[in-house]
Length: 408
Ligand code: GCO
Ligand code: MG
Image (tube, rainbow, N blue to C red; front, side):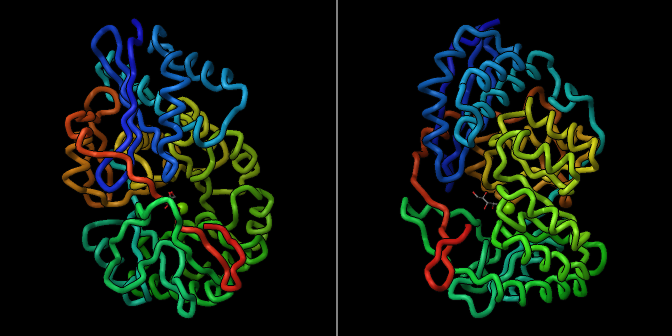
């Protein structure tokens, strides 16, 4: 069996998805996601200029050897652009493997460990009352877990992932506003004074069973993060995400010394070498890698197994940052992983996205029910894809009130 060709598509409804399609001499094709938010053309070009010409002629069933060829063969290893490109190839090869075996991928991993995988939605509010409405909206739809972000009073822009005005609580966080970033402001003291009270109020209002998550988005320094983690303990969080910039891994020791709040980290990691020490030292509770940025199913399965040895559960990064192909790869891993924790999931649910990526993976009552179709269980409609073109976008940048650059 041989790979005869592969193509890359960039574009999509309200979002630049990077989609790889690998064709074989047996008519079976595989699909993969290389979407790297706001830098989408780069993994696409890495694939077209360097990787696809090498894939042609290879046996697609040798996914492990092909992964090693990509990783060891690059010489300059890792980094999100290369790893997203490898991730798409690896996903597509697993898709082909599943189609050849006529089995959904979770069967090839070891079968199902659960019927549905719990997901969390994103609630957000310009102020506390607005946030409470947003949480109620998701709870009413059956979600068991909600990430909560709230506008902080007294800051010129209100904080990470919060709307500027009330009532816009279902907004997506990534907007395609051109190549020049919007500037947001930040004040750690105001945030640290305000947010613990909001989290406690949510716990009081929604009771002990709701799983509450909160994302600091890398904005605190180690001592602040340790103090903050301690101060949010009464709210009994499911997790506190990215309390500090992820590069400084020792910062997590300080947090652990002062608090038992569960810590989730890893959405910006792109290899096992970014998290093996954190996992082995048991400094985190959830690992947040995504199958796309972390180089595909092959390496992420190794991360999941390592995490399992150290009581670390999965909490994969989710939509809308990744396409339904990555979400499908994660749905299969979530169905299998003995140490599954939770899956991030934003309600995209647009008819345009479903038309571009038809599948019968489905969401019911805050759980993802994995498809039984062979492979990833997601298709890609090229006619639909022809309707979209690449639109450049940028993440916001963050400055302190005196102008100092800070972490988005
Ligand atoms: C999350 C993340 C994202 C990132 C986004 C950047 O927890 O989902 O923090 O929302 O901001 O993926 O592209
Ligand atoms: Mg995050």
